Structures are given as C-alpha cells and as structure tokens.
Amino acid sequence: SFIVQFSEWKESQGTLRYCKTTATLEATNISDARLEAAAIVARANSQACSATLASIQEFVDVRFRPDHIETLTANGKRHYEYLLKSHILPAIGAVRLREVTPGLIQAMLNSKRSLSGQTVAHIRNALSAIFRHAKRLRLWSGDLPTEDLKMPRIRPVVAKQALTWAQVNDIAN
Image 1 (cartoon, rainbow, N blue to C red):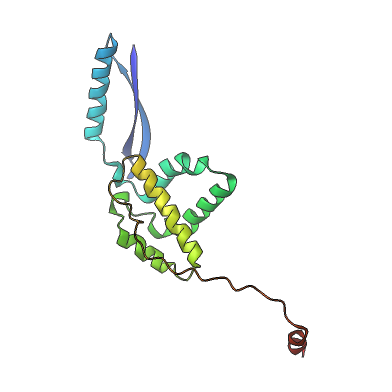
Image 2 (spheres, rainbow, N blue to C red):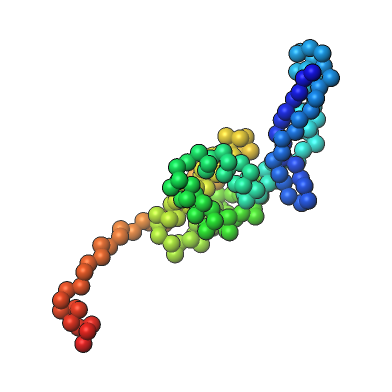
C-alpha cells in the first residue's frame, strides 16, 4: 500500500495550527499512487484556510521557532527570545501575517525610539528574519515589509569616567 503525508494549516477552536496529515492510498502501482496523492493534496489545499491568516504569534510559534531559532547557538536563541517576548510579539503578535505593511512596522519601530538605536536595529533585524523565513516557506511574496525603513540614529556611547578626588570630596560634604 501507499501512504501520503503532507502538512497543512487547520483551524481549530478559533486558532490556526500547522498539522501533519496522513492518508492511505488505494492505488496498486506508483503512477496511480502519485495521481491519487496529488488529488488528495489538491483537495486539501482547496479546502484549507490560507496560512497567511495566521497571526505573527502563531507563525513564530509554529514555524519560526522550530525552523530558525532552534538552529542557533544558545546566545542567539536567548537574543531572539528576548526580542520576541519583550518587543515584537506584545506590539504586533496579534496582527495577521498578511496584514503587515511597512507602515505598521515603521510605526512599531517609531514607538521604540526611547530605546537605544542598536536595540531598534536588532528588533528590525529579527522582524526581517521572520519575514524572510515566511518568504522561504512561500507564505509571503514580494518585498519584505522591513525594507527601506527609517531607523533612529545610533548615538555613540559616552565612556563612563571615575570621579576625581575633588568631586568625591564635594559629594561627601
């Protein structure tokens, strides 16, 4: 017997999940099995809801974390998890993947201007990685919404200097 296995987005209790589906084919030879498998997958694709209906949170949980973050070093994982937990998902996690625009990303980055320019750049780079992964999976087409964004200027860090003896005496008095 022949078996076909494919992955698809399914809606369950109001949320989208990425599920593996297995079907046993009734074909007796490989060419009939290929035709039957193609028909099953085509039928599933026509009935399935678009994966772009998934929110950024759902996409990150289902595909980005296992496919991208889990391949990184421990420091890389911590870095992405911090950016996702503290900045990206609270701000735009509920937005559907297909509804993200450069204007939305720019507004989110503008709201983060109180942070250092380097942190804002890290947030933009993490968002770029998310959308590059979605593009690789063919869930995003066209330009990335993170291209050509206006970034805050990165200010040089002023080196801290120890107090002079006179300054210590002034404070003590």
